[in-house]
Length: 193
Ligand code: ITT
Image (cartoon, rainbow, N blue to C red; front, side):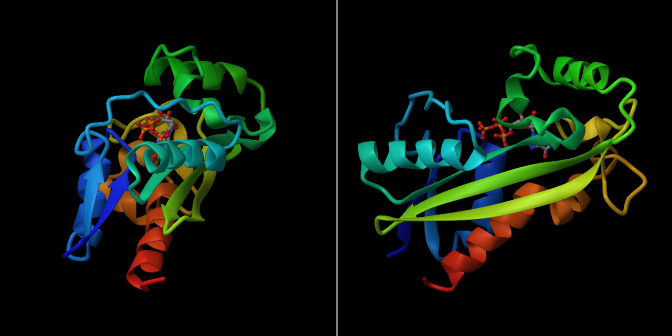
């Protein structure tokens, strides 16, 4: 029988991606699968804190081993903002508004260095394990590209002369912060630890 493992997300795309890697060894369930309709609060001031809040909620309320992720963009010249506020930087007005506000706040700033960071928090057999992935790059002065989501149109990953939004999904997934953290989680689970 496969071991049940919850991925605390409502994002079907993320669930499918993880099932493709772990489906032979684990039964990966998402929040909908376990009947969790609560909008789990993400009120911590770090990515790991938010990921832990989500995993702990599932462990406490459903008694199931669980992992969750939290991600965001950190801009060095803005004191690592928007960070944990990435999704609601422009007050919940959506991706385009977030990007517009970021470009406004970076007007005149020449240090354009930034990074996307993902932290995954796994609670397994009552132990907590965290996995981090970082993708470094720079913030363009104008958006380019239609793929992806969030800040992809203004983020140019290190070593490339295009933005994440100009890459196809497969190419972005081979270098993204989320993919790097996921790889660490998957090799940990596969190693049977
Ligand atoms: P969940 O329901 O899984 O929490 P989410 O949209 O909050 O979905 P994340 O926590 O992964 O997703 O990311 C928070 C925000 O950070 C997201 O809304 C984007 O604004 C930004 N972000 C994260 N990863 C990104 C990526 O790969 N490309 C562009 N923007 C990203």
